[in-house]
Image 1 (spheres, rainbow, N blue to C red):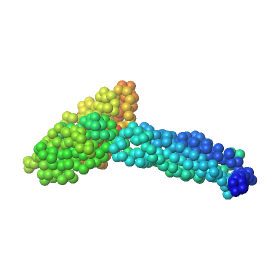
Image 2: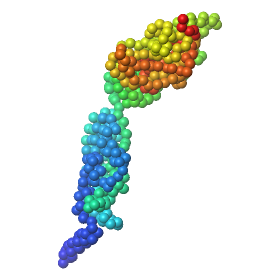
Image 3: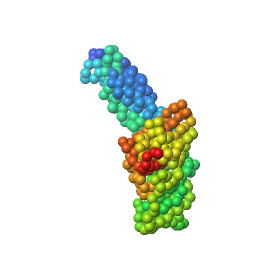
Image 4: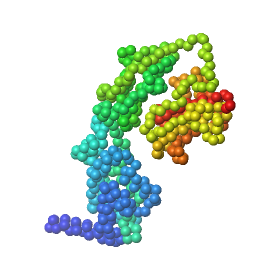
Length: 454
C-alpha cells in the first residue's frame, strides 16, 4: 500500500506539472526541443544556428558573435588550438529543470556544458608549438562543467532563447578570449638565425668615437622566445644581459653606458668586441664577427671646409634589403618644374632653388606600400654624426606606393618643403614607421648647393 501511494504521488506530480504547463500555454516539448537545438549550436560553435535560436538581436551584436565563434580574426596556430578545445564541448539538457516563467509564454531550462580543462592541459611552460598544445589537450583527462540556465520566450508560436541568456555562456566560451603564447624551441631558434648586422656602422663593425655599439640579430620568422646576450672585450666577458623576450624577427644587443660599459670620457672604451646570443636555456645561437672601437681625440687645428660643389661622400644611396621588390634602378631625380636643378643625372646634388627633392626607386612589376622619412642634416658634412643624430624627429614623413609610367614602375619618394635650404638631406625607406628606423630597405643622401644653377 505504501508503494502504491508513492507511485500515485509521482504520477500526481507529473500530471500537475503537465497541467500547469498546459494552463500557461507552454508546450514543454517545444521548449526542450529549442533548448536542444540551441545547446547543440553552442557546442558546435555554429553561429548561424545559434542566432536562429535566439530572439532577434541587432546586427552589430550578431556580427560580433559570428566573428568570435568563427575565429576568423585569429592566426592559424591560435585557431588550431582553440578549435581542438571546442571539439571537446559536450552538453546535456536537464529536462527535469524545465519550469514555466513568471511572465506569460516564458520558460527556463538548465543545460550542463562540459569541456576539457584546457588551463590544466596547457600549464606546462615547455609547450611552445601549436602541435604540442593540440596533443596535450587531446591527452588531457580532466574536464570542467558549467550549468547554464536558458531563458526562453514564445514568439509567434516559435520558442526562442532570450538575448539575456547569452552572457550566461561566458564561462563556456572563455577559452576564445584568452591569449595563447606560442614560441620556438632552442633548436628552432638556431635554425631560424638569418644574419647579424652591426648597427650604425654600415655593417662594417668599425666604430670611432661612439657611446655604444649594437648588434642586431635577424631571424627568418617571428621568434617568440626568450634570449640573452654576452659581450666580450679583447677576449674577456664584460657583460651578460638578463633574459628578454623576442616576439618578432629581430633582436637588439646594445652595449654602452646603460650596460655599465667601461667608458673613455663620453665614448665607449677602445677595443675589440664580440657579441654572442643565447637562448634562455643557454644554447648558443650565434657569435658576431669582431667589432673594432677606437677613440680619436680631436686636434685643435681646424679642418678645412669641404668644397660646396660636391659632397664629401660618393655614397648617394645604400641598399640594405631588396626583398620588398625587384629593384631595377635607384637615383636622385628632377621633375620638369625643376629642370636644370640637378647638377648630375642620378647623383644627389641639386642647385639652390630646387623645389622638390625626388629620390626614385624603379622596380620590376608591383611592390608594397612603403614608409619614408626625410631629415635635414645641416650644411656642414663634417659635423654630421649619425651615431648621435636625433632620428626621432623627421622633417617630413609619408607613405608611397609604386606608380606606373611609360618607362616602368617607380616609387616617387618626394619631399617638397616650403623652401629647400642649402645643405644635406637624408631619407630612409622601410616597410613601416618602426622598421624604417630599425631595418631600412634603402637610405639615401643628397646635397643642395648654396648657389644657383649656371
